Length: 271
Ligand SMILES: NC(=O)c1ccc[n+]([C@@H]2O[C@H](COP(=O)([O-])OP(=O)(O)OC[C@H]3O[C@@H](n4cnc5c(N)ncnc54)[C@H](OP(=O)(O)O)[C@@H]3O)[C@@H](O)[C@H]2O)c1
Image (cartoon, rainbow, N blue to C red):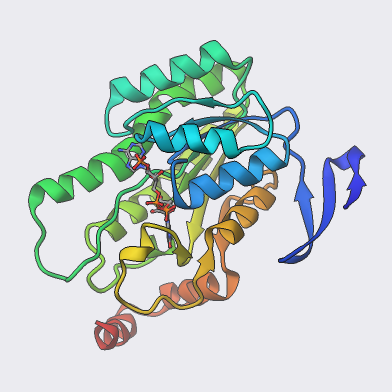
């Protein structure tokens, strides 16, 4: 490792090549959706880089296990259900009582199901909206007044490339992710005045329990460790959008630019 302590940047030779690792020393970070997949890998990565973490999700046993795996001693677990306003408020109060400050809040929680293109049970659709979109609003309800009072802080919300365009058999998951991208764009404009950094995270395919359910080919799929590495490298930059793997996400961005008539012809072939 080559250390440039002045800039808080370390250069590492890793399985991803020579990489620049940003240091999170002194940073207090709340990861919501930390019990598995990308959120879990991100917790491990950020703890290695010096962050102190509050770890949230519903499964307390998984959070306990993760806390013991993380580097450093002062991490806390704060189980909550993001779909319930009282639960997220209580979690934030717990964090405030145990941490001297909160620098960043990363919303990774989501539910997903494989899709067959047939109409879904309305209670299932409402549940996905309640967790994926409502969960983000519940977190914002607590975090924004706190950040505004200190005129600083970061919110990073995980959406998806699945939110770029309506995908074949993608409902209701794609629509929740499109809503989150739109939400982050508005927040970026509205909260910029208060010195609050807003980021949207748009992953392509990542191998996690969420995608293990898929029975279709997932082009350019990456590991959760790689995804966590990309997020950890970009959270401390000025970028609004964190997206990866780049070859896949740029392809999706090009598709997004196609005229609707051409997009629908191509999308119907994939279905
Ligand atoms: N994997 C991919 O290819 C991919 C691609 C694009 C975007 N994403 C997004 O990346 C994020 C992480 O996904 P992942 O692939 O890592 O999936 P995952 O392994 O299924 O993780 C989802 C996390 O969300 C938590 N969660 C779900 N419902 C919750 C609730 N009501 N309250 C609190 N926490 C809840 C889960 O914990 P509990 O069950 O313990 O509550 C778990 O920690 C999601 O936003 C997903 O949409 C993933």
